[in-house]
Image 1 (cartoon, rainbow, N blue to C red):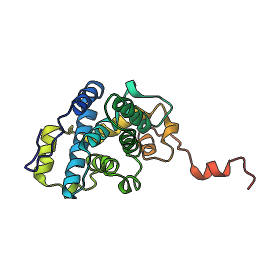
Image 2 (image 1 turned 90 degrees about the vertical axis):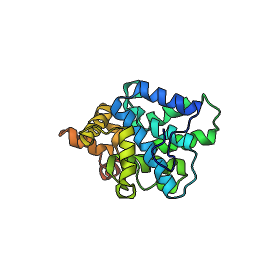
Image 3 (image 1 turned 180 degrees about the vertical axis):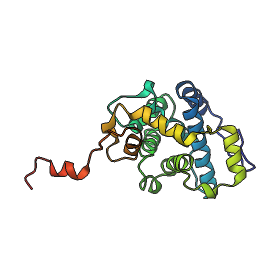
Image 4 (image 1 turned 120 degrees about the vertical axis):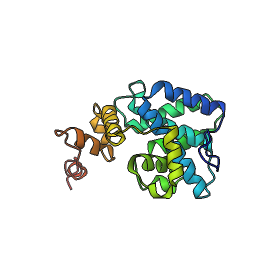
Amino acid sequence: MKLNKQGIHVPDTQMTRDTTSFIRDTESDLLFHHSSRVYHWAALSAQKHGIQVDHELLYVGCMFHDIGLTKEHCSCDKRFEVDSANAAREFLENYRVTREEIDKVWTAIALHTTPGIPEYMAPEIALVTTGVEMDVLGIGYETYTEDEKAAVIAAHPRTERFKEDIIQAFYEGIKHRPQTTFGNVKADVLKDKDPGFIPFNFCSIIRQSPWKA
């Protein structure tokens, strides 16, 4: 579906069609539309900056990035980002995709909540984070025109309370595995929702290690 005169759209291939169906059947409306917007923000950013990117791989990365929050794809002992990346890898293995391409998608998803690193990597990796940061944090908001924002939102609406709704969705997906939030932004979600949550402390772990000095 084209969203503007420049022709930003989801590539029409069997793999992308299957991706849409898979995510639509698995995720809530909230996560499906969020993931869809993430792709459009990412694709628009690539266009604005003249970045060459494999849009099929980018679409899969964007659409699968939060599937680890669902019960169907939760390992319950790994970071949800890893669960999401593993689900995407398993999905891609059914198509004519190289191992290098699968690794790009896996890495894009696994690192999408680790700021400061993806931006220096391949476009398919960096742009997933770009799209996520725009949709959740509003980073880069001013670089998109009002027409672009309106078109994306019209195609994939934000809920009236999206900010709180997405925080709640994050919480529901990670509350049973708090240990996996060590060193990443999702620890803030648990602190926000659970007053009793005590995050792991990096310095304490160092001091309590078995080393004598």
